[in-house]
Length: 581
Ligand code: PEP
Ligand code: MG
Image (tube, rainbow, N blue to C red):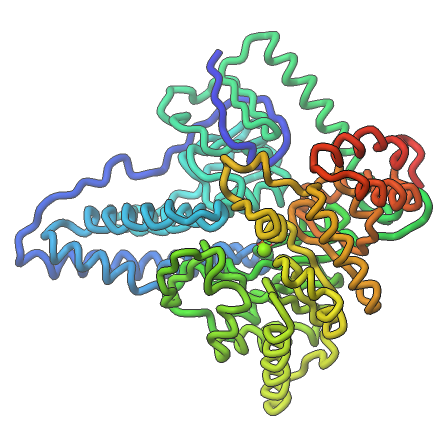
């Protein structure tokens, strides 16, 4: 029995025979070249890039026929990476400067990208290196006169392992025979993981070295809930995994049946539950898990991996795909939240001593009004084909909000002048994630249509705890009295002005926090698709009336630990199992 531990990337448990597919080039050798060979090496590189461009275009058209447009964003991202001229320029410089062959030079470019991406703090963004790797792998194969072979059609049910699968692979596999996937690289937020979750395909990623062993044909257990992979399981482990699989499927099926049920408490109080998304592929899971549309569409993804900012039309097309993926429900588009640790290659970010407090989010957008208006016009354009809300990130006060709204007005006028339709009443909201916005919440509430609390940042800025510092994570407390007071103040200010109070930080997806958020009076929660069913289950067990009493009781305590002890003791008063609405 051999045990591996990886990242639980897509839930589900599978048992079956393993097939290892390793389609990488085994070695990419680097060797010196003579000066007079430079031109022909550059030509080989350019030809391979062009052939790869055609290959991706063909793949895109083929997949569009079988899978529909909304799942194709990842191919577009690969096309953008390939179209970034720096890939060829930097590689050409290495060929010429170091006098090496094109493959070796391309590998050096990849290594530089790896270093750059490894320095990004945000796990979602740093994992975009897998997209760059996939594109470069395609070009390298082309130089070797090969192409990425499609996965074979298997006659029997199997589990497949590979160094990596591209999202295109996943769209092409035969779902009746492939039970799960294992990869050596990638993580929770890689596109392949996102797509695996959207396709309900169990996946464990980051299992280093699995392809190096001679496991082809071996029996394997894959646990996409815990991230465990067991090759050659003994009888006992196999039977235990089988029982866990049956139990997991049973629970999931039961939970899935609740997807169409209304999000309402035992005492009849409705709450809007929506999903957080970054790419259109995620839209389908939001609907499958019963979400009422999108409460937070993080648009940063679209601005990554490109040397120039996306134009209005490109943005419009992607926002439209997102809208189609969740139609006819609400799509809440957050304007660009870049800067800080999410640096864009298309922008000349200044080096900052303290980026978390630096030129980021709405400040960055306001510093480049023409780029900002491109995004606003693109969002406005989708407002004519379905319900859309616009949301500004990291608003710290009224002046910023007014300037952003002024640019929105200008964008509307520009569209109107060219006869392009949009919803003139498109709702505008602000994210409340900076303490000054909490303090000014009553003033902000008069000038917007909704609030959405970004607790991830609000907790970080209120408690001065870096949200990504693992050493301080024990002090990062959603139930800290200072956070709870802020939340209460935000809801009161929103309701005082007659606008809804929404919350879209990670806290929204934690069923244990639900009674408090309900009790405080939040109208809407937005979370990752995977949390929707469990949060709704909890909501349906709660009494809104009791939740309000218990939430108020939290304010009698002065430390996070005391609040938690109190909530644990009173949890059963708010929730009741088995007798939901
Ligand atoms: C937040 O800060 O809570 C939030 C939802 O935004 P992000 O995590 O993208 O900063
Ligand atoms: Mg935030």
